Length: 322
Image (tube, rainbow, N blue to C red; front, top):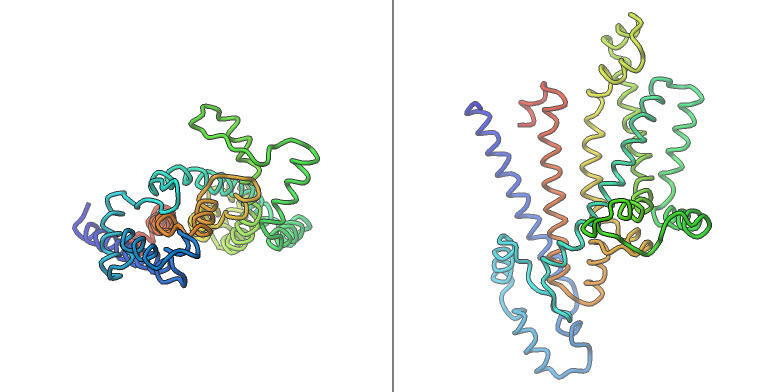
């Protein structure tokens, strides 16, 4: 690896660390600067001022914000996100590590389902631009984007759970329990719920990019030579048209991990969304800080990985994205 590439990689790593530092400051300030008193949230109203003061001192809330942030960040860098201040006062890291796989699986499986359907659908629609199939795909994806996730989830529950009885609603089976089929059976419907809007967005974006690529001279030449449509789409058109799709995949994964609150609530899933909502309702600020920081780090790292992947999709962009 040349010294120039090493230097560029080092600069990108420093940029990533800077973004993570800014994200940690934002997470800390988001919770600390919110109106209200954590001591009152934890003890409830009606206690004596001495009780509130003692709890604030015990939690370190009477210290300067900068000192509190430095201590919190230093502990977080070692993997210690603190302890819950709400009984049973469990370890925040343990709770996050327990909830994170659920959200990751739902988000990842949802994106996989969306991509597996969106890619061939967009290719078919783009190759037959202006046809009845193209118009049907465009109308269907527009309709899917118009349906909120909570409404899509309710409809799926009504049809596939309550009426057909094909899927359970308020249960979860972890992979650690040894049942892959049981896990997928419980995860598929929530994943399908989050996949619907992503599927529509992926299809529309990839279709648009494919249409532009299919009008390039080298593709027109391949079509004039009688090359099979599937070979043209897979070999010549799909790869250079995938930049926007790859970006959306990464952004969607990071976003879905933190935004599956409604879906997790509808299906009774013990994921990050449920963890954050319950902690916020109880005034458990260390739990909120730890969970939100974890999501922010995942989001930033995923986007950095996407940036590096551009060079793999098209070698011409390596100098720009390194």
